[in-house]
Image (tube, rainbow, N blue to C red; front, side, top):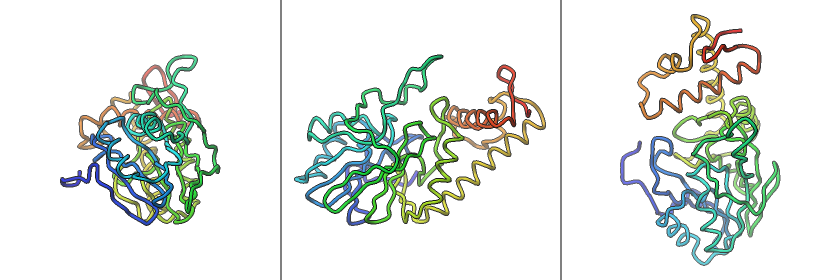
Length: 288
């Protein structure tokens, strides 16, 4: 964690068309908090990832928007640190909620997700891959990037080359992929998709701006492949449950993140199983 004071509630401006406001929700999963972005000039703006439904954060956003017209409230995905403020902000401003699809939380065979998802999210418009929202002097294009969640979107600011990456690529940590909604195979395909793009800077929901995005994405792809190879090496030595793999793979891990690490390992195993590389018997996994 960076040293305090953090700029919680303050307006920062990383480039002419972009401002950000840090929400007061720091945690081992959110770093210093969720960064809400305000895109556009003074007279017409969009908000990206309005964040948690915290009165102090809503007050900070309203103050940052000022007299400008709020054209759209845009959400990258529906984790509870990203989208719950969309509904109250829409009620306060009259702006539509636009962006990712709502998540179907219950499917045949059991719930698709866990309590980390926002069940209050009701978009007025869902953006498909390549669809755009426009305002005076700005254009935001949706980039479909499933993996961290099945409904995850990034938003490309066409005028500057910036990409708002939500939780798909972050400036402080790798993204957690939690099955069954999170999907490692989809996540890797989405990383490949971003690597093929030519965005100049990433603005993530957590952490500092990413000034060398393709270099970071290449490293993230390599890191995930390294984890996959590590799993295969360990299972080649001895079949194991996930609980036996985690302490061998994650040294000096913050105990609060043990569950998340286990879920990422599970996501890798499910992807490897689909590809016919590993199999399981009960909770024991082995190479196929």
